[in-house]
Structures are given as structure tokens and as C-alpha cells.
Image 1 (cartoon, one colour):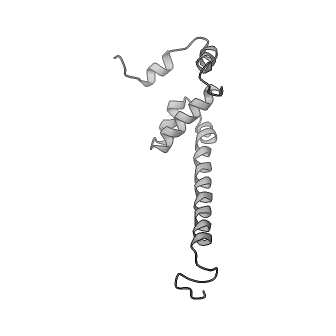
Image 2 (image 1 turned 90 degrees about the vertical axis):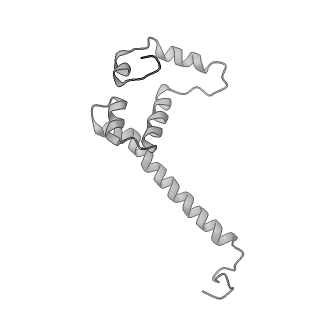
Image 3 (image 1 turned 30 degrees about the horizontal axis):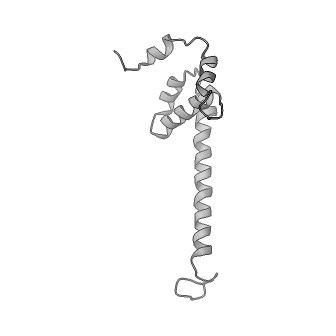
Length: 112
């Protein structure tokens, strides 16, 4: 069926000279050339972050071992959690520093 992508399609079709074609796409775009796996990582991480099951991600990625999926894609998610935690900490510090209340006092100006 035209316009429909299936799992078997991804396994049966090979693109000859993919690297050359991928580099040709970058020419004239003004985009810094990256590797195909950067695109792959972005797409698979997006699928994971939007609710795709970890084992389904493994199947789509074509990994034979879950450890491979975990190493390359689930670690990204862990990093995202760490970065989110840091952002919340920074936002909390900004609220404390910029609230206008003197340090060591509450909103009514009473010492805490």
C-alpha cells in the first residue's frame, strides 16, 4: 500500500551508497554535516520519549540484545532526567534569590 510503512519494509529494502546520498543531502543546506546515527538517535529517542515501549524500541532499532538499546537510547533518557533535575534546582535558586525578600526572612519579612 502506497504511503504505508511496515516493519518488514525496513528489513527488506537496502539503500545503495547511503552515506554518499546522505552527505549529498547536506550540501547547500547550511546545516553542519552529521552522521546518519545522529538522525537515528534523534528519531528513536523521540519515539521513546513519546511513549514507545522499551522493547518495541529495541525491535524497531534492530538490536538483538536489550543491553544495546539500553546503552544507546535509555541512557539518553536518564541524562534528560538529570538535566531536568538541574534545571529545577536552578529555577528554585532563582526564585529564592530574586523574590525580593531578604535572605532568612519569609514573605512577611519575618526572620526564619
